[in-house]
Image 1 (cartoon, rainbow, N blue to C red):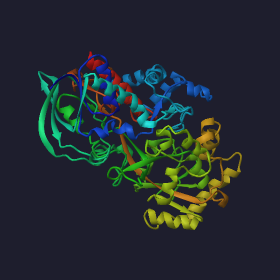
Image 2: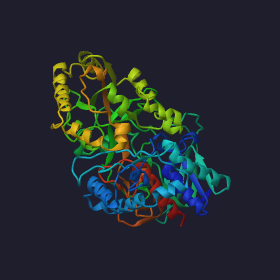
Image 3: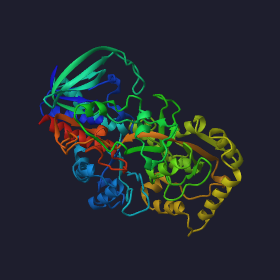
Image 4: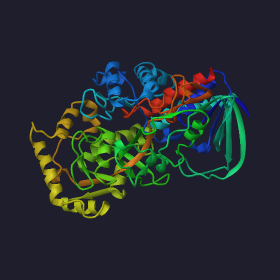
Amino acid sequence: MQADVMVVGAGLAGLVAATEAADAGRHVVVVDQEAEQSLGGQAFWSLGGLLLVDSPEQRRIGVRDSPELAAQDWFGSAQFDRPEDYWPRKWAEAYLAFAAGEKRAWLQGLGVRFFPLVGWAERGDGRANGHGNSVPRFHLVWGTGPGVLEPFIRRAREHVGAGRLRFLFRHRVDELLTQGGAVVGVRCSVLEPSSAPRGSASSRTVTREVELRASAVVVASGGIGGNHELVRSLWPARLGRPPSTMVAGVPAHVDGRMLGITEAAGGRIINGDRMWHYVEGLRNLDPVWENHGIRILPGPSSVWLDATGRRLPPPFFPGFDTLGTLRHLRGTGYDYSWFVLTQKIIEKEFALSGSEQNPDLTGKDLRLLLGRLRGGAPGPIEAFMRHGADFVVASTLGELVEGMNRVGEPGLISEADLKEVLEARDREIENPFGKDAQVMFLRGHRQYRGDRFLRAAPPHRILDPANGPLIAVRLNVLTRKTLGGLETDLSGRCLSPSGQAVPGLFAAGEASGFGGGGMMGYNALEGTFLGGCLFSGRAAGRAAAG
């Protein structure tokens, strides 16, 4: 088979690249090792958050943003410090211009719509020029991850109908074919058909091998988060000891195979030690893949403790500094930590990341969405409170500690010590001044209407029975994103170790560190993963078509 453009991977970046190339009149083939029911890849499971800068949604709720402030936040978070950060820095500059410019209008033109309240994710390390978002920038797509995917799947289906695009599912790429130093196609193992549900393990039985030729190949195969052995082998010393136990935020087929295959064909991998994993992972009630974990999206009020019951120091508060908190917790000697909170906090502040955990937003169900404004925890949260392996709900502190020592390692939590921690915090609630940094941040964040309306409970005493019951949640390390990857120029062309473009070879999405081999540097501002797939997929698809 001969194609103009071949795309490896049918996730969001691959779909964007494929549709852009087909829009330009090229004959496009998309190969993916999974079956058609997995079309859309990891974006399907996502909450659908996108970073926008100085958007109408921000301005309507009184948020003053600017390209200059966004650049301060981005580069303060990225902390680029390596010679190989040349292209990642260029990609960061280009992406910020996109996020402050045509990104929203482009998506709206495709039918994407945004939730009116803007979320304030990754609030940072407390420094004006350090890591974190100075203002809310997390724009939730109406329809969550499937809502982001929908226009690109629709466009792809239209191109299939017109004969410009073809999907080859259950085709696993084992080699990039080269000729005279240029990439000219792929060698695939054709896997037997599979009816395995999206995300679950599928057969790896090979039925035959095929070679497919193309003038350009775009690698959009994702990252390494499902391969925990590889994650541990690349784990950087700056984040401490790799965890012995983690929950998986992505399926096992997100294994990084194509990165090594692309490197063997002449591409260069940079910043492989830069990665993004969460520390608020739960073991899923109804797992889709093995060891399936999902992330709590916390508001600012829960008290964060290490496994022994010690309160985490500033700025390691819920929703502030993901990798800083991970680094701190890796120094404790334990693979888990705790949130301690109340019923009032969980009703107002807890959400779960992912399309399947937010049926109202994913299904665009206004009636169900309005139910969030009524009393009680959201349905998915209530289910975890009742049945989740990581939840402890108790009417007294003694019962809570007993449950924490049952769910965690026995004997680590002392009732007397925990009572002292919570009483000290509660005294600060009664004081209009105070010195508790988390309480001060909480009061400040409630000045933002979005937090006051949906995400931040009124300050109250945790040990007051009127606010109960008491709740403790065991938090596990959750693997998620690869921040480094294949080095690319601004056209998405893969670069060799000598810095020259490899003819015929492009990369997009997480495989390229969302652009350039790591446009986020050491830290992400959130809402940047899907956006990075959109931006890099568009660039690579257009360039490959040229």
